[in-house]
Length: 178
Length: 175
Image (cartoon, rainbow over all chains, first blue to last red; front, side, top):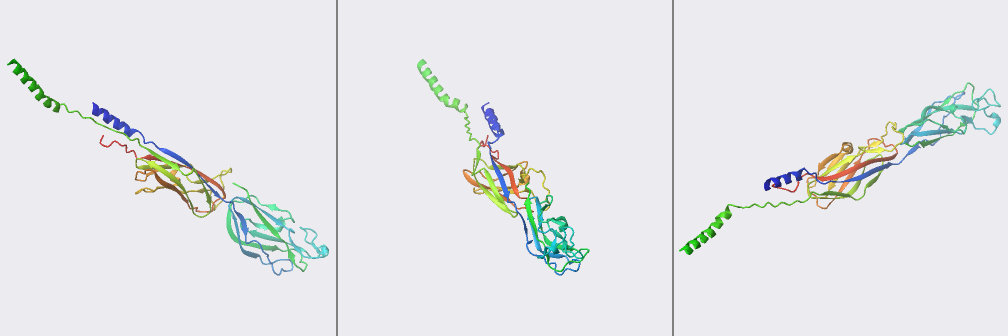
């Protein structure tokens, strides 16, 4: 009888789960937010334009857009078009949409241009830009892309006044959070 | 004569006593019990890693004490580091918002084997034995990761539970 009791005791001990102790670790990590466009700064030379402003599309060097959160791009043009550099305001275009030279109605003093920027958009152009008025894109997914930026002129129906034409386009990227 | 007979009877009785004791051997079983015991203590209860788009690792020191061969069970809440977001799904092709990792539990004891699991396997809990009984031993939880693509910027989190226990060998050999 005594042996039976001891055996029963041993069996019950085996069946009892071993004590366990648990610890919890909160594992957190942070990936810094990065959003930049590099290789974009510089000057685009269209070279010699033909009479009405046609030119060969110009590609700049390697532009990299790296943005690890969804973002919006804001594009701002100083002039809203390629504007004749002149000290005589009478030579200027009638407006941003009517490039006819005020003092030279058979000629134009402005020129639209198009631009394709990797990670920002294709088919952008000065025709969508008003001078010093930022245009913001819809939210763009996080992007890691490299490529060249392409600029092209949009020829006018009238010839251009001789001279130099210029504009400045500024691009700003802003992350939208997650 | 009656006296002599009585004396002989006493002598017989004394002589008979050893024979009686040999037939009535009593066995005394003595048992003892040392309660199974396993415990773990972490140097800290949080890891805050700085993530990059490249491989990384972090280490958490720990102490264990066990009077049985130690089995460790590890479970992960998300199965990896998950982006904290209020926007549900982040649709950004070429980027990832979930970072799996490998967790390795290691004890500095002679003959101890590291126990390693991929975080995805830890969702329902995964366990393994280090193969030895660690007595007041130091150890570590090593976490390593290698993103397969750039990470969405932001905060990531997971919760890991580490549970230690004996392998169930209770201290009653022979019973």
